[in-house]
Length: 128
Image 1: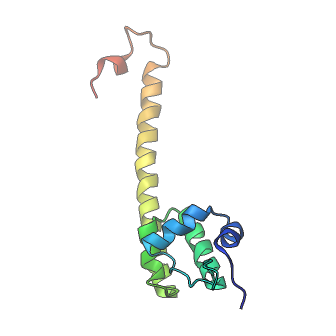
Image 2 (image 1 turned 120 degrees about the horizontal axis):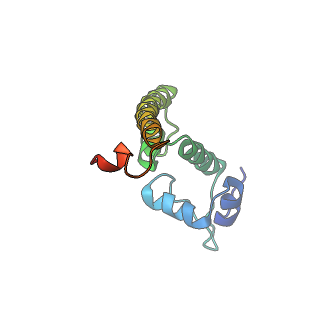
C-alpha cells in the first residue's frame, strides 16, 4: 500500500498543506499515523477523501455538509449522497428563482430610466 507525506498528498490532491491540517482539525480527514521518524503517513483513502471534498466544494457544498455526507471516517452511502445532492439542487433552484426576480426588477429599473433625465427618472424619486 502506498503512502504519502503531507506534501505529496497536498500535491496529489491539488491543495495546500495547511488545508490538509485544517481538514484534520475539522475532522474531515483522520489524523494519520506517523512514521518512525515522525512524518505523517497518509493513505490512498486520504487522497480519495480530499478529492471528494474538493468535488463537493466545487458543487457548492459547505464543509459541514460534506462532513455529513462522508460520516466519521467512512465513505458515506449512495443514499446519503443522493439526499445531499437533492437538497443542494433545491437550494440552487431557490437561488435561481431569487436571482430571476432581481433580474426582472433591474430590467424594469433600466427601462424606467432609459430615456429619462435625472428630473424625469421615477426610479431616483422612489425610496427603496
